[in-house]
Image (cartoon, rainbow over all chains, first blue to last red):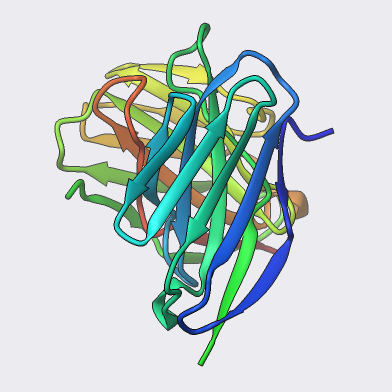
Length: 113
Length: 112
């Protein structure tokens, strides 16, 4: 079983709509989360990190973390064609090798014009 | 923004041959990483390094070696390439161990 699970595997959203992505960890050591975005043919690029319970907003992107349930979500408001990409959730443990990230298998987002 | 470059961008190798993938960063970052990406598996850590002349094993190190000759350069070596090592390989760097990682553009490796 993967330690970081993402859902859905893919989703389509109309341009201007809201996309919601989910990520759940099965390892209680994971306390720090990132969302990465990967456009086709490119390397992943960090969108945002979230380390505390609650919401964190950066532009059209809002992440929400619930440490008790080890659930983190990403909401993309006013989706644009450029948001079409593969989105990864990544988690890091509080202890141990400080920078080891565990990635989920990704959610493919398609923004329909 | 952090700059990480990789070479080659794509490579075709024969089974049993030796493959070296190179990574260069110009950001004065201490930490560097090698990941492989396969459909359905996201990114998996192969090797990492936090100082020149030292490397550490990640989650899937079998069949791979790494070399960090300088702070800027980090190589991934497949001594005996196998079909199962066909994948896209990404190098990344971060300033400190707990910071955001910056990825290169990737190397697409096909082993025949």
